[in-house]
Image 1 (spheres, rainbow, N blue to C red):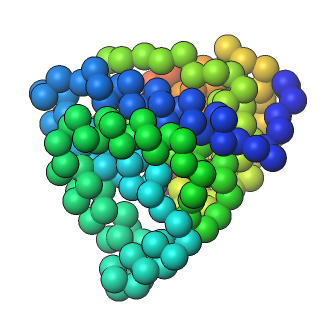
Image 2: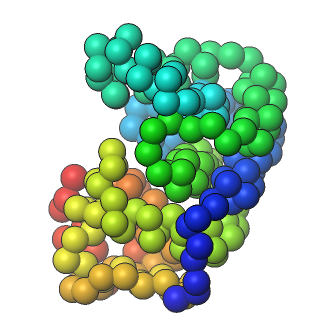
Length: 211
């Protein structure tokens, strides 16, 4: 496996957020209204969530959580829809300017990288779009997710399985094997079931049976 330094992920975060800004600038009105791989959210909602993440700070996070009755899901959904209702040019512009910010909510900075990578794929994949995400970035996110149950429960989801990338120098775990492109493994680790079509191996059925 290639070496990964998680001590400063901000350059990678900036790159992925700028890639999201590029994506926003290229979308048609019909694409903005399209469904994504992120639950019931449309492209607008996911874009609103990504922009919201560039604004966050610990103070804003806890204030918003209190206003939402201490429901994390309610807080996140409300912000995504509110910000996502902005005009698309503004969303693209703020995503680009937000790529330069280094404020973030409580928790590991690497979570911000995972969010930009996965939500970018949430938009691209249903639209048939593709981006070659740098291998180092994908390895960083995969290494983070494999040891974290924070919010998305990736560690629990892949427990007892061996994940092995077919297009990168990364593998993790022991047990029935799940193989596929590293970007698809990363997305699958977060519970995006649509990505399972890209995977193979005797562990896929076990992974698919887990929420």
